[in-house]
Length: 135
Image (cartoon, rainbow, N blue to C red; front, side, top):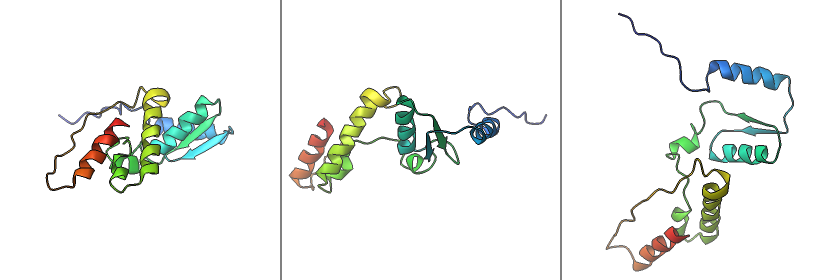
């Protein structure tokens, strides 16, 4: 018995892509966002929430590029603390808080993690890492 082809359960497929492109050919949009990673999707969501019409252009599936390569996690800037880049760490933590509380609470959820206890590391590294989790 031969294999039975099952339809792609994703709503993003060749047929919907063709329909969307045909629709865009005859309609103007306020904003065109190129790239469906976390930044592009966030920009598109923000624009739509402000009442603008948006075309999100992505060559593959959502978050299939850089966002997908980075495990699709939205981090809070803890890695920037390691290089003492406090302004970027703070900005990242604030953006994460906005994503979790206002922009996409249905998509972004806290995830527990473990900070290794490296006895050979300087004490200040542990303190900075611990402080970074409180932001």
